[in-house]
Image 1 (cartoon, rainbow, N blue to C red):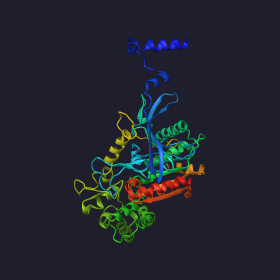
Image 2: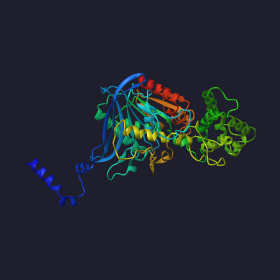
Image 3: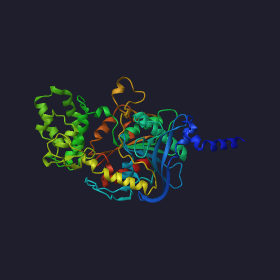
Image 4: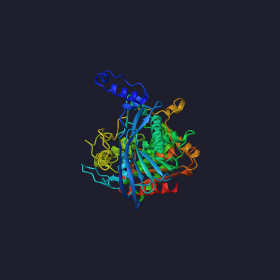
Length: 502
């Protein structure tokens, strides 16, 4: 009788007269029923990765994050590549990009997915379509399953119902949503006891530190075997380009040196960029830092000596450096280094050069290392996910989203001096101190101004971070290391070895 009554009631409510006056749902079950089911597409594939043939499934899907009352609040889009057999003890790696506001297509279609977009490897513009989508033997699917994640507001991920997307736009809120997704994914796929790796690029390294804190910072731990940081930014305070912060000049100097080396602006150019970078580090953290700290008390022969050395490392004239008071911001450097050739250099990858409207400005019109790749990645991912992976949606894939009003405050550090100095490196330190099995991989490009390699070294050399648990690797490209084919192979090899060692 109860079942009959429920069926009768359901039928009655679907009549036209009742549909017009249907009340707004106010119970979790009713609101859940109003939300369409998550989109899911599962396809089967085979590929060769690291010299090993792997049969795998690809699951492109939406996962709903729910509130405490069970109401769906947000949809997270992910792509999971799982080796056939679903071995519960096989490593699993969760990857995302940065921004904040970037989808995960860069690491997906550039580095570790089973297919990649093949763009020019020699810092040339990607031109117009069609862009080759080719098998990626450098994917790490031979040693780990992979889940690529798009945070809310990026990719196909979005808020649901009356939930505002900006409620997820903050360091802590974003990290919590990703950690919630990971916990849910582990439960649904029976992978709680798998070795676990977490990795990101750019702000994705910031997110990695914050997510590690969410996963391991309570008694309900999700212990990690490794954290993979590619093009790292952790200490935003030290790198802030604001008047009075001398550390920003120190951190950027070694990248200016490697860039000058690459473009032939170093008079006595060493054969090896790593050697020149080592010299630049020593100068930056030694006599240059000392000189900057002296401020306007630096004068005479000491100032002249610093100016001369700075000219050697940056490739800029002593006259220009003197006018800049020995402090050159990256934006000015991009424009000034090759001004005599009427070219600018890139921010994400200073191997790239661009031509501005004219050569008289102080900073470039745009970043040639971004507009040199964005068209190819956007087209390739959309073609791949809607074609090979058969994921059907009317939504547009958000490559780089405009996530406004990002909340940079860290939970528990909203007051006092911590509110004004944003640094997530201590999260890495705590994870390592409290998890004896965790290690950290740091990959850096010599030609990356977005996240300079010396900034990562500085942030991770602070007190409380065990140095013997860190691995630093360097590559002959910029922010997106994998846009250089040789370095994609090296990066893949190094991360594969890192995972195997764990």
